[in-house]
Figure (tube, rainbow, N blue to C red):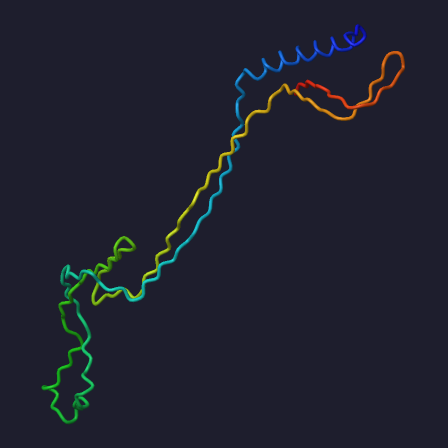
Length: 180
């Protein structure tokens, strides 16, 4: 029995010291490591509006403009100078005309709003390029690994005694380690 105590006492002493050291190491709060990953994606949505309808049309002001006179195609050919005496022929190539300048507002909810102004102005088409940017932030919190570790294993073992005898059988081992 004394021989067994000779080998068992260091084992129990080491086991007790290991538990004391490991117990102190686990009492301190470990700081977690935060790994952050950011993904950014952009999407362009095209909204096409063909021949939008004006919601509002207002005459802003009038402008006097000199415009050329174009002979009416329904009229006959203008008289030749040979058939009409020279005093009765007067050629006027332009005339003053009052032109209304309009402002038209094209609008559909909150999708678009277009304002155009001029004489007989129309908006033929409208393209809206709506860009949506999505940012995804993923955070992974990894606990800080412990510096001290303790392990118990069981399995087949071989024991060599100081007298030179070798014993084989099942056994359990206890280990303590420290990570730098």
